[in-house]
Image (cartoon, rainbow, N blue to C red):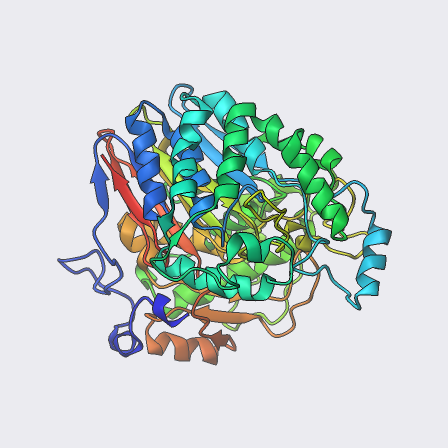
Length: 569
């Protein structure tokens, strides 16, 4: 998507090698698209400005960061259905100022209990497929977002849920103007989904998605939100909504049932972390891919990137090679821990990282195997909020693949996710499909502490880009001294590989996609190291972040690749 380019190509060729200090910015490369946002009391950063304003309004009304995060997520489900909605899953990290502890929530749903692996393969064979498709009824898994809202609210919330959902209900009924990037993806998504029942009626006007600035209403979603506000999570999982979802799926060749929804539960989990230089990065354990970011950082800790400089061949080459090693382990081990427990302690062990680091040489690795665990004992929206009490929320929520499966139950105003596409089909694989199992998940929230105190709540949405983006943000802040806005706006690296938790083998080193802005000399040097270079223009994710100031204030950042806004008061 050409309009998402960060820096014109002509300017990229003029950039020097490793960036030196400059008086006007931290680096002499024009990375930041704007100044950081600084506020004394509260902050919100989301991928849609109206959602950001809703989050701030909720906090001004006496709500806390948790209330604000739920309100913003509900708004994004309405305003950015190309990435979020109550038909999808949710993960969150919450810094609770009272207990001074980070809490993790896994609100991902499970596969239909009535669909066995054998039956799934039979259905695929009927369609001439050898893998789970991205659209239609087969990849649909139980949506976990609404239960995630109520788990967060029940443990930390302050305002009534009806008050939290009220702004989104009003916008759904009265309408809102669709923003630029969202309109682009909305139009592109619905063209591929029109054949599925419920899409044309609920997500198009005469078969087309909305234009930029067009006023959009979704009265069906307003009614769904009102039912949830009145009846709580059971209104979604055990009431009329669940029955309508089950009936819709049964009529259209699906297996997700009202019983699957009734049996859903979220899970509070212990976040996992690693120390990098003087900070600690926190992620959620599998079935997410957060451990990949921790493993890659452990490997990269053995190099002096401050001396090498941002954009140097040392920076890019070592980052890509460390990512290859972490992703090889991701492909083999990450899965629902109720079915296959990943060796997380081993994967994030510093000694294991040192062993893996020895595999990095001067030439790009063309094939990479997973590590030996016997040696020693997963399109998306991201948002973050912070309040005057010091609470912080790092929340990510997704339909997967833009608008999900395309399955849009009539009259409900949302689309069911296609997260089940991320199961493997090979028996014996940790992530192989099974009834009632959570698929491998790409979506991951992140959090950084320094000396045990909260420092940065952030995320980088976007499939395989997410752990790679987390690593790059940490390096930009810690190694390259960028401020919060620059860290997100700086050009990114996206390494693409066929070696996935769903299967596949890498034989050619994968593809190193480079966003415009890296020195041409670095690109030449990477080619000489046998890296395959690509220039994908839209796969670099979307970043939002909030940083805690020593005096208790907040810094917010929202990068230029989305429609978003960071704002505070």
